[in-house]
Length: 191
View (cartoon, rainbow, N blue to C red):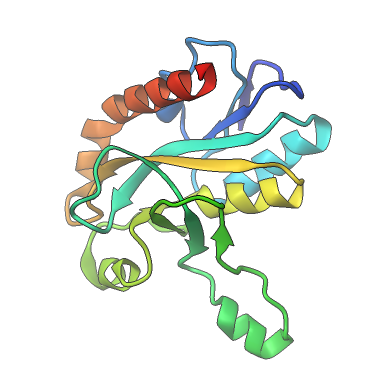
């Protein structure tokens, strides 16, 4: 975990998993939290920071795999689910939901988050039946932001199609994706 610049109540906190995804966010003075990869790293890092200081809102930026071939470019997520947590099974045992769908209050693709890099196979087909995009941190960031009473926006840049070779494609695309995410932030926060 690394926090770049100070958090304040009048500015959003930009949250990314990796420094590679943050590369083009450092041209302005916005605070950037780099959490590390996966839901646990994202939840832990964001909770630790928010326990000390509150921003105006949270903007989670990062790369994602497209589960639908027509999805390209920058996507602002409408809903987010966990694909590796059996909320219904836990509900059947306990009578409580611990991982329901999070509606972000806007139209946009459904993001499935889980602690696995999706690169084809049966898991991709299963995920495509429930979501449009896949990542590894979005759900955790949205959950923690909501738990702290903060507005949250999830912005994902499509880096690959979550098929065979996705890791190689991600490595080749990450800088260009980070550049487009930086452009989205500059356009959005100057508006």
